[in-house]
Image (cartoon, rainbow, N blue to C red; front, side, top):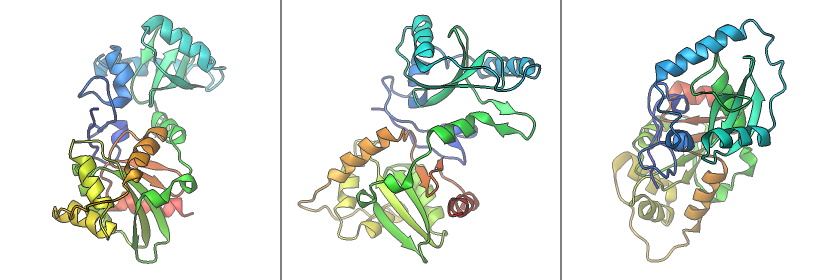
Length: 287
């Protein structure tokens, strides 16, 4: 499996940093682009995709927004299979403000395609009035998580201050951006943090995660390693089944980058967020 870590305030949008994605049949390529990269869609140059989106947006200005009925998931799946022949997994199809162009949630990523599946756009769809990123908004909605359903017993619990605000993090002990996030979290107060050990990046990730999870004080073992590079003392015997459970959980939730943060309202972020961004998201989640 090929994984990479994710940094930056919005790595899911791949605007400033390249996200570190999950399992890939083609090492070195991001999971969100597995089906797409492997199927020769992503390789189109970004400026071509941007121009295509711009042209579509210009035509879209002449038509009423969101007026068309999108094809069914089965119909879009069949259209893409016929034209690509690669078994892309379509899970949702929605209308867009652009006539004849539909938003398709496929393999953990949003792409845009026509009804016949003959043309495809890869990129961010921006509503110029208000500069709203429609792609990111749709991704957030598709990936929204029921926080109350998380198996918190399988996570390391850290309480700061009164612990009133809550967040969960999927993190790998060898993820550099997870370490950067951990440094920032030292300055966040009044929060309860649930860290799901998510060993996916290196061959050493799982043994280190096991040693941290099996430590008498998991919270201290985690922070000592992430902040000070102090290795935990290996334990002779321990039930570390939570690690496998976390991997399965991450797969179900489409966790595709480390770190991935889930807030109490179900909103998600990926990457090493700033202190201001974390506090803002925590406050908003508590409303």
